Length: 344
Ligand SMILES: [Zn+2]
Ligand SMILES: [Zn+2]
Image (cartoon, rainbow, N blue to C red):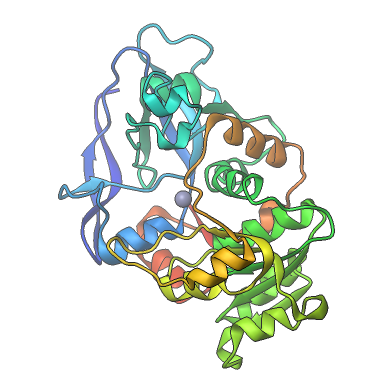
């Protein structure tokens, strides 16, 4: 499709401008989508505040959680038609590299991220259209389908965390990702302790089923406060970090019982490091792990959770905002007001 579209372009930290730009042109196997919903995300907020390693170019489109209608198809596309309601992930594995052969698809060496949800149109590249694009059933709203991408990351994280029925799980951070963790951990039949600095966010956590909440501002001993909620004060079965601050990564490693699984999920600024008590890891036989991104399997699982109504997606979307007000929505997120905003 020839012509211009409105898009929010990232020029540098705190410099995002609504401009006219070219509608993306399609090659073989690609699709053009008119965006109906784009959700704000913590990683977009990070990009807005401090830039992003994959967005060095001036005037880049950004935003990666979206849903919309296919309006044009490149040559040779099979399985999709103009008019289909779809959501697509921001990447897809190549299935050829070393890590793909190990089935570690989130580590794919040929991942190319597709951004550009804060615009009128987005192009779906060939491999993402073939592997990680989903048709939205009629009963699911665009904005709820757009939650598939972040949910897929969290389904991946939960699946790798050894959470069993009846377990006590602490989730540090009640931002959008931490709250998705709360909802999915409750689905696993575990008890949840949510911690955050914001009473508003902790109230969301309780709405989503958190059994206990701790405002970290109100205690000088966050680790002790978490352990005090576990039997015998021994610590939680699973401890999850969902803030992306090295200090909280360190605290999270201290909250588990012997043999606990510690999932350090929130991405920290690059170049940061943490200190861990070696004796604690050795004598307590902790499993400490990182989990990154999603795979086609977890994308499929996340989409099933949404389309099957197993997760109350409406709770994660605070309000609608027009494309012109994207910066305001990101600023609100930065002030920890609301969860996600639906940019239309
Ligand atoms: Zn995201
Ligand atoms: Zn690969």
